[in-house]
Image (cartoon, rainbow, N blue to C red):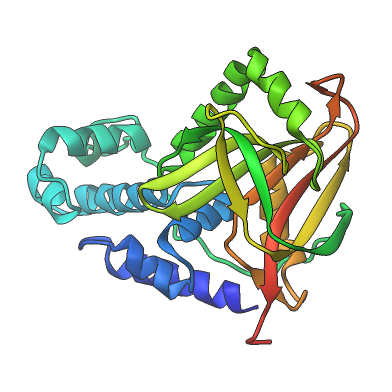
Length: 288
C-alpha cells in the first residue's frame, strides 16, 4: 500500500504550499516517481491533471478568504501566485463561474474542492483479464507525435493524431510492418526526458523501414497485459486507473516507468475486431 502513503504525502505537500511555489519535481520525488510519470499517474488515478488540481484547490481557498475576510482581491491573487489580476480573475471564474469581486457578496454560489484523499476501497465486482510476460527488448517503427507534460492537452491531441494517420497510406504500411509481438498496430507513449515525449503509432518489427518512419527500441521488461474482447470496453485511462488502484495493490509489483503500449488488432491492413490489449511495464516491489 506504499503508493497510497506516497500519494497522500504529495497531497499534504501541496496543501502546505498552496500559497507558495509548488515544485512538480518535489511532488514527484515524494511519490517516488519521475516528474513525467508522476504527472501521468496522478492524472490517471484522479482524472485531473496536477496543474488543474492545484488550480482548483487554490481557487477554493481563495474563495473562502474572499467571503470571510476583508482582504483585497489583488492581495488574494498575489498570495496564490498570480501577479496579474486578469490571470487570477480568469482562473477564479473558470472554477466558480463568478468574478473574485462577486465572491465577496452574500448569497453568491461558489464551488468547494476539498483535498483529495487516497484510501483502499473494496472493489472487484468487474473482473480484469490479464497475463504477465517477460519480453526481451523489441523495436517499433512508425509515425510519432510530440507530446507535452500536460496530460489533458495530450488526451485531446492524440485522438486527432489517430484520425489523421488512419486516413493515410503510411498507416497501411505501418500495419504491414507488424511481425513481432505485440502483434497489431500499436499506440506507444514514450518518455525519454522533458524534451523528448512522444506518442507513436507503430508496429513491432525487425524489418528495414523507410527513413520517413521513426524507430524506437523498447527495453526488456516484465509486462502485465490487460485483455479486452473487441474494441476497448474501457478507455486506456480507465484501464490504467484500475491497474494502479486495484491490480497493483497486493500484487508484489510496482510500475516500472517504461513506455505504455496499446495494442489494436489488424484486419486487411486496417484496425479490425479482435482482442485489444494494454501493456504496462512492471517490476518486483522491493518494499514488500
